[in-house]
View 1 (tube, rainbow, N blue to C red):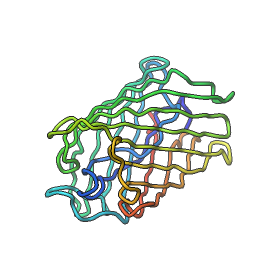
View 2: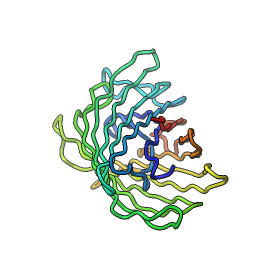
View 3: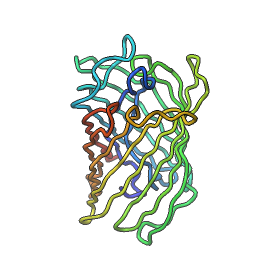
View 4: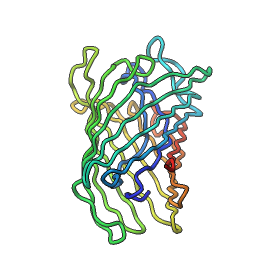
Length: 260
């Protein structure tokens, strides 16, 4: 999706964590790799994230948890361009469980910084960071407050996008130890027609940074993705498969940019 259009609405819904013996449950309001998209100064954006799990964990990790199996997660993302290198945003997630119940998923704010960014038509490297802080109700997480630092590195030109997101997260309440978790995301797409790109996205949640989980206890997903950027249609669609025993078998995500 073109950076100057960063109203890009990400259809994502999200996953609760791994099994209780492996990692705490956690609401995930987006499944995407951050690239070089950033709003122009003063530009306002709205995105819709939707995620569903046709085949996933149905046994709760703790009493009252909303499990991902057959659930639908919807998140509205609002974004504001503060300058050429800074963007602020807010996530407002909701979820519908497999029984039809509808719940608020809390709220999260973010600040994106993208100091290195080349013109897409010319091609080049980009680099930046995104800081987030949010609250999640107990239906989705056994820890209420969290913080995250997502780093963004990659290359883009007219035909190719290659990006990685090494990400660090911290629990900030409910007796949290302060030990950070590590996540990793990769995206590689190629333009196949004007306004249409295809490729893959890969995500791995490795658990505590100082004591990473064994591979089969990590949440690892591989998606086939399609990016469309033909006004008025700007969206990302992906179908993912789990690569480990601790991961949902099937995940479907959709990212749609709302025209405003």
